[in-house]
Image (cartoon, rainbow, N blue to C red; front, top):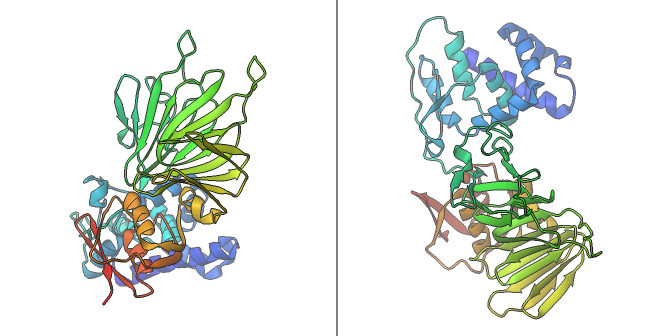
Length: 412
């Protein structure tokens, strides 16, 4: 397919993107309508842009493909690309995606690799498949986790292929939503629950709906251990890493007491009755930080305890065992849950620890950078190269990727 055809298709995607930003119906853009009609795509594109569920899935697929290399290949060769190779980190299989859906996905991401598939489908002559070269890209994190059952069996959730209710043995797993739900999990005659553990690796995130309806969101390199049924007096879980909780309000027991919700994070214990809060308890951080969004909580360690109000953060020092009460920037603390990195005068080492967990990298320092602080924000869906470009903007540091290591040094 020629250069003119490619430019027309890229123009379609750009016109749709601008029309969507303006908030006006696509039909109001005369140039766009005429171009779609000329290409024979008008009805298909309008229909598929309205199909949000399938479009979202295709966007996720688009992010796994080195579309720049594919686009360059199309420009340099006359033969079409029939299948798009996935990023090596995602596996070696090939994916083929509807050409029309790819055009719709390109509207949102400006990923044009799917147009190559369109060429192969609209070319009347049979052409051999060509494998496009892929750059070595460190992929961002995604929904990945391991669920350890009471009998020691481990389910690698991102390798399963079913949604909620589709598997009789594990009906509580919804792979598509990145969720495990224990709302209707069967219990034994005594009402006691088994102990399950949800674990996210570096480059993973997941959420679990606990037996009482409370929800826990796990950041990368985190875990939560919980019973499949809570007892009447207490709802108790233990965590590592970083977890955000949205806790259902406590029920009153038969004795009139409220059923508390308790989170153990190493030596620190957080007790709540119904609230939203975040705990950052990574082992390679100097302190365990509990941030209250709404409601009230009590944080204790040993004989020391402190009550929190919304908007406050308690920092528990691992070294001294003391508490420090501060008022943090909630946007920065909770950015990970909304799919962003947000840094506000943050130490570069702290930033790079987050980067290492999300992109599954090893950080290697060649210089002492303890005096460098940084402010900025970026989507966690972006490739590592975009994040590197952001961090290098002020000219103080140089970041280089070698294998699975991020080398950090002063820019000379």
